[in-house]
Amino acid sequence: MKSFRKSVLAILLSILLIFLMVPGSISAAEDISEQRFMEMMAAQQNALNANLLLMESIGTDYSQYPDCYGGVYIKDDILHILVADSSGKTVAWIDGVLREYSDWITIDEVEYSYNYLYNLAETSAEAMCSITKPYDITGYYVDIVNNVGVITVANGDIAAILERNYVSREGPSATLRFEVVESLTRSSNDESIFSTDLNSGSRGTITLKGGMQINNSSKWFTIGFCGTFSKLDAFVTCGHGQDANEWTRTGNSIGSGSILGAVSYIRYQNNGNGDFSIHTIASGLPDTVVLTNKVQNVSDSGTDISVTGTYSNPPVGTYYFKYNATPVTSSATKFRSYCEVINVGVTILSDNTLYLKNMTVGQFVSSVGTSVGGDSGGSCFLLDGSTWKIAGVHSGSITSGTGDVYFTPWTYISGAGFTAKTS
Image (cartoon, rainbow, N blue to C red; front, side, top):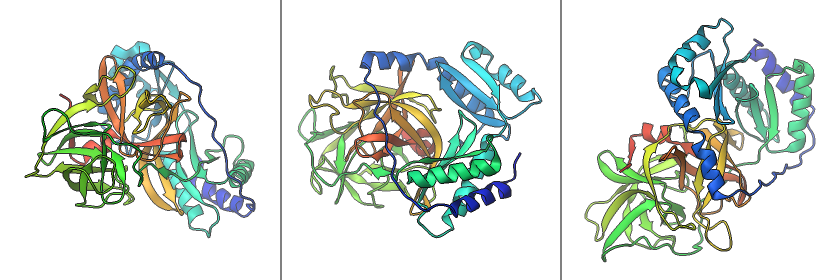
């Protein structure tokens, strides 16, 4: 393997040649039907189950993996497992663990482990950020499919020059790639777009579901999922735009609506994993608050989705739904975007300093996909066979309305002590 010192030195030398800065662009996805997308999700069931069993057998917390682990991804409904081990021992172990899923897995040998590539990208990005601007590093991650580390830059010319000079020093088999990714745009909103009534049933009862709108003193957000925290009824949403112990109210009219509770736990921009907050329902409220395991479905059928399971950390290639707080078409019938996971374990930088860690990045697979103000904290969920499972909560996007979308994987939310309501 190549040394970190040599790779980082090559990057620093490349920086000296950078002068121009031009932003990049993102192309739109093609449209597909909801029925077709549901079929695509259902077809991944065996690959998803194989991945869960593999992760449980490894015993990973999704922040550090065995040194022989190269990553996993789903393609054509098959789970591709990458190993950085030429001895054959790891392959034999995986074959034994996943024997019942042998028809839905394939094992490929790669040169570099996930740990090596992530550490290389992290060390190199930190070295670049230690130098005076205007290099504007926006993040780093491991491109699992191509077995390379990636450093993201906000400017196209910078990325191109870094890539060209790094490859010229390291050769065509260079272990780092540079690409254009703009700064992350948050999806909270300080404007009221339309009203969603949280009251249902008899007067004085508030029934909470994923997808409903809430607000604090300055912005409005979307509920991800309901559950419990420290034995108290609670719900989870995004972490940005929130303050500890701040009151949460119903609806999207800033500073008004029925009081629900307060922020009891928040993780955002503090070197932790993810962007989320947990709100516990206050005691002694004038209204009765009822929690459900549903995600409201204001789509063609008008039927809510009942979430009955969780999926800790969906791998690259997983299809999932992202809930939209506002309709994605003028006819107001589509309240969920069709997405595919394209990267996992992504670290995001802002102003060359650490912002968020271990985010999952999705890409729209339908032209009607969107991410706009107010979507933050909304539900990300997938279909595992006939079971709807929680995947995480939405954070933001590269460009408002288009571009890649980011969410916090469920493993970090549950790791904070939140238990989802699944019945």
